Image (cartoon, rainbow, N blue to C red; front, side, top):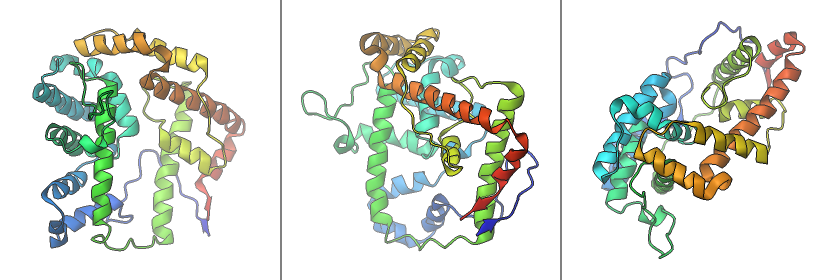
Length: 307
């Protein structure tokens, strides 16, 4: 089946009237039924929170940072961690915001907050890595940092997966998408992709450390077009990523601790690897885009899809 061409008018295409219901939207409908009450009280809470506004649904970067900042300041208060002043939240938690936005935007803001509630009562113990004594590793070393946040949200995601496995029987069958629904969905992705590649052409290279127009969905789109996006960060990529971390000003004890970790682990730090991988993928992406933009007329072909 060939999907007809969609005329780009700039901006995001809004799917109105429930044209392409998502898994989350079906869950939101399920809350209105009594079936959800078959779950345990904790599972019900996880399910309900998962249907609230997702991080990926918030288009405003400022609001996204504001909401996450409020949550993380609350976490610092609840767990006795050093918290920055509200005016310094964006700079102090910048690396945390990056990781959450890149790897955990499938969670809702409410779920991020709930994760630490479940952590406090031991609900995540079976999903956390073990320390050297064989106990759940809840260590934060007095500050909110990338390693700690990643560890907790990964554990929460595993706990959520167990809950969702129990809801399989409760969920209605997923309706098969019509050609019109499939076209609408693909056109949203095409529109966002074209916006990114045109920005690249007319404004030069993106700032690798901050621009959010390029994400995993961009790489997936390239793969659908037939480009191989598999890559491994080089040593130079890791050095650049480490330099970016070290180049940030220290505004809190949290960043002091993070820099001490980086100084100890160095270039093999997990946060460094994630940033280096993004640098490597963007470099590969820009090389492909340079080839694609040699013949700009060919860009219009990106609006056609065959299945």
